[in-house]
Length: 211
Image (cartoon, rainbow, N blue to C red):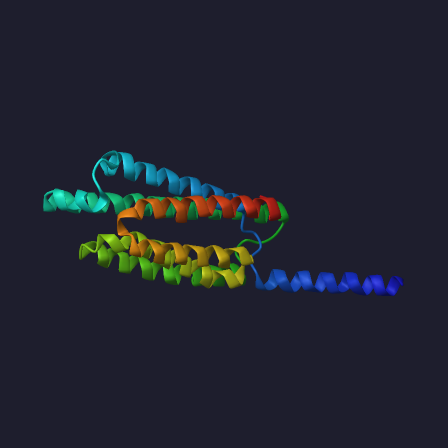
């Protein structure tokens, strides 16, 4: 009986070692929460400061401004979105580093490197494509592309970490594709995709795996 129990414990230990060698398990739920809050703050800035409290419809806003002013507003919106992305990544890195230290694990491992590479390839590709859309004035497709390429990045990186990342990526892709059909609601889909979904995901991750 004791030998059977010992064998079960050994199997569990081996399984844990294999899991830790193939998956990045230091991802913190708090990073999702703060990413969602950051996205909501970015939407607040875009709506109240850049888009004049939403008093003019998104597409009408760009058509009603002089060309040079429209161009500046475009880049203000892009700068706002980029700031949200950078802050979200920094929060993710900081909380993950903190969790790795708390658990006594190394943060920078072959698995975390593969995760980062698989995450960055769709993100960088999407970023370049979004700049092309911005320059060519296809503004209605920018928010959908943000959501879609971000979702693809999460799906691509999901095989190296918790499975919840994969499903969050699928939801982001679905949200982005849906937003492409209703371009006038870009800010609403931004709030849902980057804000609400991240907060729900972060809360679920925090409850299941801790900080």
